[in-house]
Amino acid sequence: MALPETLGLISKTMDTLIDFVVNDEKLSKDFEKYLEVNNFNIERQNDLNDCLIGYILDEKTQGNIRVLDYFSQNNPDYDKKIINSFKNSFKSVFRVNKILKNAYNCTCLANEKDFELIPLVKMTNLRSIGLYDFIKARMIELDNVFYLLEIFDCYGQFREYIANVETVKCLIKYPESQTMYNDKKLKELQKSTAIFNEKFAGVFGSDEIITSNTLADRFLEDFNNLIENGSYDGISKDKYKADIEYKYFKLNEDEQEDFIKNATGGFSASDTPYDIGFFIDKVSGLYIIPFLGTFNEIMQQNSLENIENAKECVEYFITSDKVSPNLIIKKAEEFKTFIPLINKVFSQNFNNAREIISFFKADWTIQNKFSPTIVLYNSKTFEKLIGIKEDKRKEKFENTGRNELCPCGSGKKYKHCCLKD
Image (cartoon, rainbow, N blue to C red):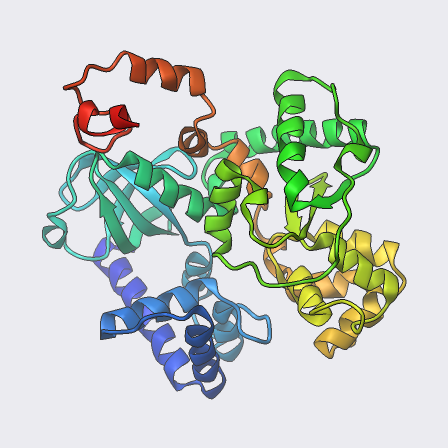
């Protein structure tokens, strides 16, 4: 298919999807709920269109069906290839290496691969994007050609820190993006997952640890030391036992921001104590799951009455991307009450864990899914962000002259920036 025809098909399909959401009674109500829950500030028509596109490409309906799948069910004759391309699109940050006549040669910070990306608008409309700048955008592939479906923001070449923060947010939202079009990265994550699994099982004799958020930092520090240095000193299951009041509440801050804050400032920074579960999935890595202990207690009691917000906790556990299908299978085997209680909460009639997974976790069967923890552990961008290479970073600052550009990437002179700190 010629390039103009492909660009026309992508634009036409997006228009069709937007019209479908607006005119479908069920989806239009669901979209209004989506706006309300996320508290979006809609001031212009463009703001509404941006929210519509995000809703279409990323979200599920209240019936737990992806909006794109719902569209396909109601339009079975529509070109499935283009719909699948939309389903596999993802957001990331891209560094511009070269500006071509009709495209950008970019490095995707999520999967560390180079792409030639064709924007869906004329290059003349994107004159503000310069060489070595960073662009936050959504990438889509069709017939082995890659396109910029949306461009959300542009960061100058000296704003690398901001670009890294936004990349990490995207990696948490789209962990599968790290292995897309990168078989080398896929093997790297598989190897890391195997190492994590071996170490976790070897130390704890279990695939699950429940602790408090105040002790979670100690666990992560110890476990990271075990992975990096092979040191078992001071690590034991009893070390992370805690007196926990099991209850569920919605974490105040956006979960993506929480993850960055927790990775750099500690889980104990939360104002309200809560339980955290660490679960090692043999296939997809280490998961950090808030309220896993509370969920276990609900199943143990076989009741939604004794624990605060128990129903919401069960809903969170089953629908959250933080919970892998293998953990659902484990809980179904561990608690005889599991299937009946899930049916009660969701007003369904599931017979087994596989049916629950098929209903709530269908995406896991079509993409290589890894936990955000494993993905970030193998991310050079995340490594830069939290300063794992602290010695090299310290050396770089110490060798910077007062009037040189600050190594942090702010674009300011060192004396006017980090030297003050």
